[in-house]
Image (cartoon, rainbow, N blue to C red; front, side):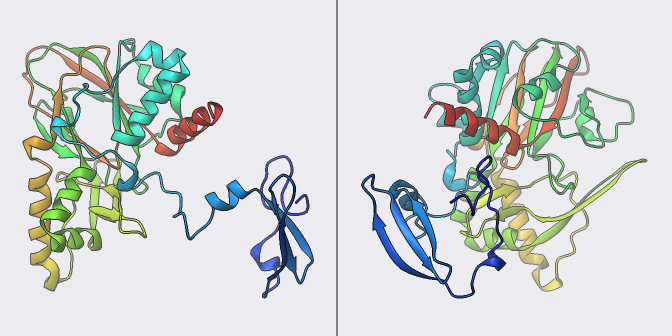
Length: 341
């Protein structure tokens, strides 16, 4: 009704405190078009609903909208991609909404996709983000370089292999999407590895409900420091929603702070922590591929863990990384899908 919502944007014009403390329905009937008219008292307020809207929003038939939980995802492991990994042409994604929808659906459902033939230009990763959402700038800058450095402030900037991890757990809120764009790749090794953290967490739950409960109920500290930065967070390794569904995972052995759970829970915490770290390194969960020059990997940093194999000190390996967030990418997907309805 016009007095209830703004006609231009549909936003509600009143607060719940403005409603009478006791509301009842005096009358409800269908009109010729099938719309349902409801008369509320004591204000004598009439509202009109379509039957479709009432069914879609019936709380006894439908649960809350949730696009982040395990229930809405396609959990995967190494042998799940019979038709190949989601590698997509950058030019096609950039110029064709159908390809863009396929890429964004892959991010939503599987947690990642890889773009091929992205121009190997400095800062190109930020241009890719601008096609999809907005850059999340951090203390590392709008973008960051991933290549070997002298006295690096992060092990990512060495030639060492890295175990499966999520980025920036010491930051709250965490950047929810990470991009890594390969500009040069002439080293031996340095393959990329991805693990579905939701799948790993579900395996942990199946193997030990006790360990799963320990990690979902134990809030621990992560920390990152260098000469200019001191970032801290207190979060669980596995986060659940109100339906006890997995919505976020965190694991970064390099950034976990001193464990300070209560002494009577210390042994159970380390038992669960060890189990969790063992599950995520199982070979059957890992997909492994090489990012060639011009390839760009984009993944959900609240779900997908990434790693890399050790690489040689000869040759060159140069990636540029950046962060964006799921809300912008999901918004674009929702908008594009809405156009096709």
